[in-house]
Length: 402
Image 1: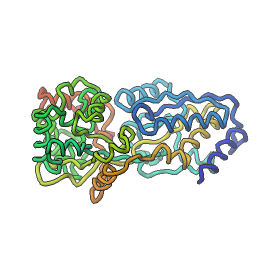
Image 2 (image 1 turned 45 degrees about the horizontal axis):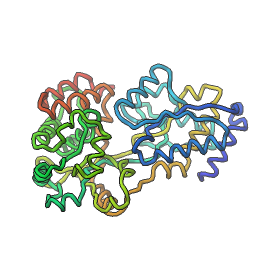
Image 3 (image 1 turned 90 degrees about the horizontal axis):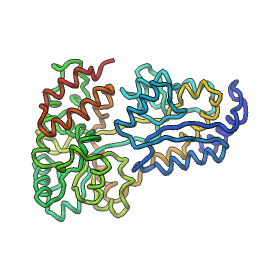
Image 4 (image 1 turned 60 degrees about the horizontal axis):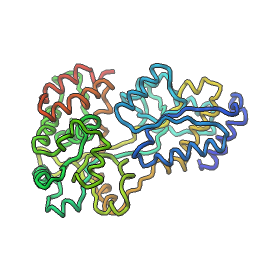
């Protein structure tokens, strides 16, 4: 459906009776929450879409978006638990994060039944355990190992295309006062944890969902040992355990760090010229040759309409806003990538011929994920917790339970 048609429908919803519902009230105020904020490449476009909706409808949108991290996830879930959810939410789907929300959001099937002209697409990648789809996605993602190729050339360091070359590059950069791998262990150790699993596990092992400690693949223990090995090799900044993600990313952006594990959303932080000296690589295998035959990626987030909005007097206005946010043009604006040059080519190469797998953390319940990422990973890195202690602690949370 064209954006113009979707927009006409959205405006009609606000002014006419649709599918038996009363016309929307004038001067409606809606609340939205998303992670289109901070360094997200679509933050500005998101605000412009909301402003466009306000201009066309005369309604007001109060947005409370912020950068996606564990604190943001927790705040969203707490708001839902307290009955303080927004009207429209952009959040994770088809995983442990979304499970607590499902009773308080409306399925796309139900929305389409009431507003058949909208034809909101039901993406199977976001289908929940109950068989229903509740979120409309706007973009996919991938994760990989970003490198400053010019720094590697300047210091004659080998690109990390296998484990020995990664360790050699770490040694060279450490000796020259460059942080080898920029990471914050205090708030965003996610990429390090996931990449370490990829460095050790097969596709089948990465996708395992053990019910007991005894069922955990041996490669998961090796992955935690990898984190300790990297820390002992001097891969991370001395303050990695107390710094924040924004600071660790600044290190990389200002070339005070040679490498960073991150996602495709980081593209907004790079200038076009910078992309000519950047590349994104698959993670090297710890025990074996070359790099992993997998990469992390998928479709993990989408726009929800909450049941609070659905059962309120401003249902039509909220549905119209959902239609605007998920129109073809909005999806292009929110889902576009600014990658170019060498970085774009390397991103294509990283994915070509490799299996896409979803992050392990996405299958964990919220409590287990927080324990694994925010308690275990920093402790493993500093040597105060063993790999076995880490996984025993996580498994007490029944991470993959129903």
